Image 1 (cartoon, rainbow, N blue to C red):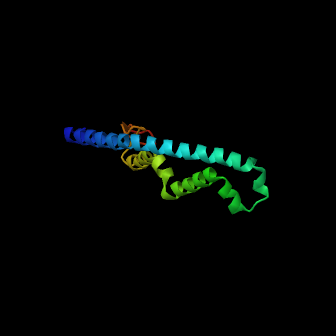
Image 2: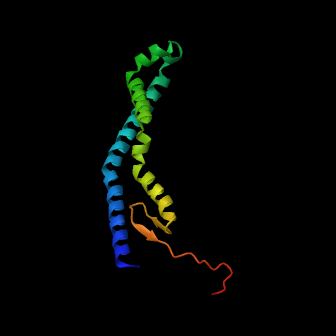
Length: 130
């Protein structure tokens, strides 16, 4: 390969790894938020369903009797509507899209953004050298 092409690939790889690694702390933070809200919702649902009054009183009154479950469920719904599922998997989404683009250039990348150069495809389908 030409030296300028190698330098360009190295620069592209550095930038790609920088972008993927920059999502790390943010992704971890959103995963912790999602896990916490999910656990609160599950615990609240357990107590809400175990309450004998749940089947007797109207739904709104039952939800008002269990504010932890109600608030955690509302927060979970709001987070999913705002796109927390995309924030949790942002590095994976980026690397998947990059693999799609790089496949046109006979390359790929790993989960950290490091480029993988694939061998050139053999254009001789019949095996004869011309």
